[in-house]
Length: 149
Image (cartoon, rainbow, N blue to C red; front, side):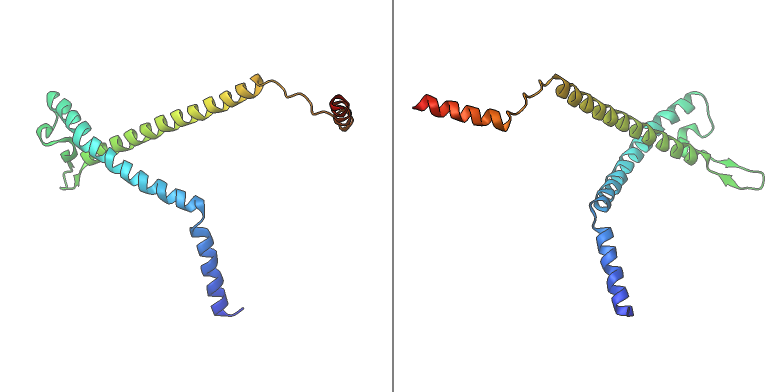
């Protein structure tokens, strides 16, 4: 097989892989996930963190008026460790994890309810009478012909 044929084959395999429905669905999920991440970041930075900062200020915490993300521990060697940023990222993660948990819990619950509903409908539906045999069909036709005479 020549290099040109190998390259063409590789390109064809890539096209088949890249444009499968699963890959497109995954790409859509990633885009929606990125947008959801921005919403969660805004929620944490603009709503949750000011509330946490207010709680720290009431407790008389260090740098309470500046916001929790500005909390920094400075070592004796002058190394700054911004632990407030870490707290903010942990809160981001917890909120995203909780939202995904709720969404999956509701989705899986919805799917289970749908499955139970289908099973209940299948059980409640009366069984259809068996189809007449060929002999019964022939006898019915003969009867109908005799009635019409």
